[in-house]
Length: 439
Image (cartoon, rainbow, N blue to C red; front, side, top):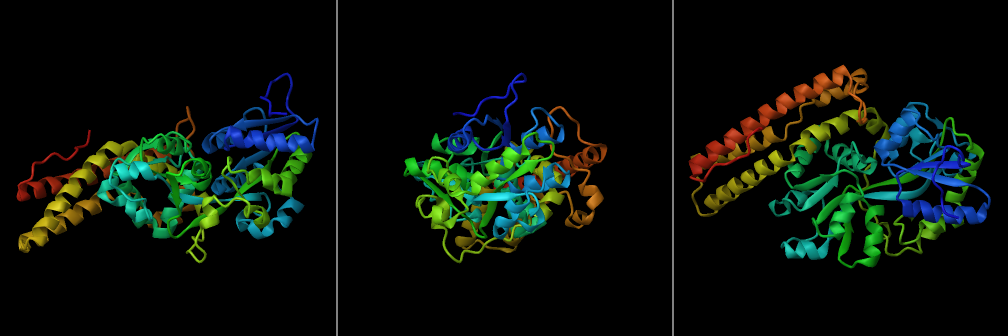
């Protein structure tokens, strides 16, 4: 029996809110209903940000269970008292649980985060599959990379947070603003990234491995890389406060962690990596199966991510999403001038003037990658609480609007100063000038 849509005159017995694809929901529903005939099961499919809006604004129908890949989202829900402790199920899965989420989250799979790529596309453009994060900053990847926005995709938020936690606040944002110059697009949903890669619209995408795994099975050109340090986190489900069928929801949770539920998740077409090690031996093509033993893992801090969730999402859009064209223009020009300076150095034309030129180029990079929110301010819990998630049709609070206005002014000033340095350098080198100006 397939999951049915919710209707006001016939409310389903069990309602599951999820960011998973309809294919995953369908196969889980079919298997569950074979074991529990007579149960009516409905799935509400929403991207993570929309799912959180659904719960926060108490939209109908009220779900009994929420199921998502993004661990951060559960911390946000728990903080707002939107979840119900799962009791004995949590104790059973304790070795796999993020400590801060222990009362609520029942892990049933694992997810790794990294880079999906298309070998044929990359070869056509003279590029090798990326070995790690730094490879994406090479000039050849300009216009060949895609990702979603963390404000619209929970798994993308994990990727952005992983970069910030692994590198540190300022270096992490510097990396992301440089990466912005390589991006072809920021997609509206994380699903748009693997679709674009499979259709060869771009060559590399930042995604959760579950989105890449099904494609790897059917297309030999598709590959996946886990950059170091590797981020691997539990995929969870939790009971929703106010749900009408929490007993049935608990039975569904037990199904997810049971051998039969784990075998459904192991289906190659679903791309999931079950938490039961016995079951995972049957999915040799999943990227996590080939993760090199001993690779450095990121000790991902879900509590830190929760505290600055709204801030990171807002910053990313202002620093990257809203400035894609300007970032791309700046970095293309920067790369051209870097090649000119390297060529002069190699030809023996390295002079005192060349030292100044290299210093100006480095200063331009520094200005173009300076985050307008100082790391010291992250200790201000009251300030961080002022940053809300993006909600369509709702205006951000006064403090956030004031902060964002200051960011825009600072970013425009810095990028204009960086642009002026490049123009002056180009003039000294006798190279035509045309660096994207602020609109």
